[in-house]
Image (cartoon, each protein chain N blue to C red):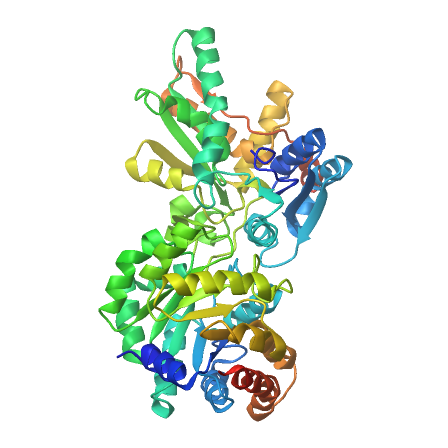
Length: 296
Length: 273
């Protein structure tokens, strides 16, 4: 799309750095200039991805305003875009932002669910009983859920970052604790104070550390099609360890939230049921953060 | 007749362009707000755009972003801003006051509650970022019912058909963003603004005010040749910001704004036809 529109530069915001690396990769492949905005707090805790982006030739700009995480990176990317709209295409990393981004990103991410639906039917000759995915902005979750929306027998669970617990106020769970409001060009559930000022968020995972959520998730929550739950930092960490030791896969801290909830859900659903979890990222980027935890 | 119409009618008859000034209420203390507003008027400002702060002002460059941060740090919220307008009205019943900011704080207060309170406080207009024209229509009617003009913005990238619709929907005036970018940007190109404004004035009856990136008397005078109002924002907020750390008196602050505003007022008067 960027090339079709004659743009020579792409920009992105990134939290965990996964989207940033993806954009830097495609920019390198297509010969486009690339600038990725990342909160300075996120740059520190996901430094391996910062290195990757720079190796790919992208400029990574530290955002030092506000909470120095994903929401602030989005603000800076929006500012860059309106200032450089003649040559720059903004590749938003989630299903949020001004129309048509929520729909556009969903339609592109929906490949996840289409392929998953086809593959699971091959594998178990049935559809799964439940889908579980972590929800920050919500792109990996929408990507998985979209193909199954009409399959009413398939339950869906979106897992928000419970941080240090909802009561602490240090979390990133707008669907659990937020109210409708307008930010970044869309109306959705937002963590905000009584005056409409956006609150700071906290999550052990950079990619979930966002005070809003894609508006389609707001709709899916209100309609009841998807149930939204939260998982706290400590439980996400435990799920990461479990996945590593049982499967030899180190999951991203973001995806670990989904894994933690899936484990709880498995107990509730009982034997013989199938839960499809979106393993949205690898945990290599989180090794630096995890260095500070004692692993036994 | 609204204060805004009265003001622009009078200026048109006098052949003068409006000097519109933007400051952030509560920057850097809420007690400075009314003295600053009165000083703006003393120095020749015709319309005050009074900003109410937001945590994530995505259309602002670093200068006005910092103004919002200072105002929030001082505890400024919408109810306090409306109180400041009420106090200002005790001293000045003529100068139009436009509340300018982002949609979310108004949405959280409630549109009807906001319209009632803003109108009662003596505000004349509202200008909000994050409100596309499609969503503005109903709100414009609702606000008009309270005597508030909902002012709409357009940009250099707004298409001709969309400009036509925005020009028809806006009340009070039409805010023409002069450049592709943020407040306080350095990329102002007078020629291209002129082309856009002259086209707009063929399509709309309302006054056209131009803002973003106008900093010098020369720029103000050039823009005044073809527009109905010139908006100065970042230049003022920058001056306020530079004095925020110091222990200066309110008088020092207003005097400092005077050194900025007097040449701008003179430039606009020189441009008068």
